[in-house]
Every structure is written in structure tokens, then in C-alpha cells.
Amino acid sequence: MRNKCLAFIEPLPDAAFRQAPRRPVAIPVRLSSSAMKPLRATVSNVSRMGCRLDVRCRFAPGAALLVTIPDLSPLSATIVWSRERQAGVRFSRPLGAAVLDRLIERYPVQPPREGPEPLASWQG
Image 1 (cartoon, rainbow, N blue to C red):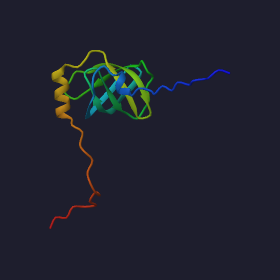
Image 2: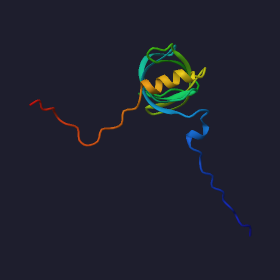
Image 3: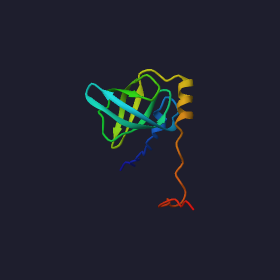
Image 4: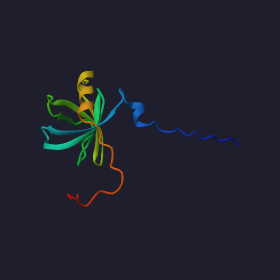
């Protein structure tokens, strides 16, 4: 009788496949392509090579689109992955380091508020 040895391989985290570290941001963008009407989305993290979009639709991997960030020329990009309400995008050309630094500074992620939200403010 032979001993059977099963090997368990843990999947690598998504970050292991990235070419550059991502930084959390909250950037309002407009997405467009020849196959769809323009729509709004939010970039929730960004690197020089790509970003994650929070968007209310799914895309086919490999689809080409333009990502328009306020005050920048549209960025040509390709969908790498897409899930419900999120998609990963690779830019056709890397962002410049100075551009990335400006985006991180201009669109920081706001920390969630602590405690309950007030129903109304009192002006007394």
C-alpha cells in the first residue's frame, strides 16, 4: 500500500501579483469606451501601473476604456479583473511619480466617523 501525500498550496494574496504598491484614495472618475455610454466611478486605490475602480457594473477582462480623472488627460487602460461593484485596471502607460503623489495628496481617503451620526445640528 502506498502512502498518499496531499499537498496544500495557499493562494497568494492579490498584492503578490501587483507590479507596484497601491495607495488608498477616493478619486471621482468618468469611464468611457466605444462600447458603452460614459459612467461615473470611484478609484479606491492607485499605483503608477493601475487602479481599483468601485463601479456599479461588471466588465469583461481585456476590455479597453478611458479613465478620466479631474484635471488630467484621459488615461487609456485595460480591465484586468472584474467582480460585482469592483474592477482592476492596468494603465497603458505608467503614471509619473509626481502625478501619483498629487493624486494621493489631493484625494485622501476620509476615515469613517466614530459614533452615531447626529440627526440634526442644534443652533442655540
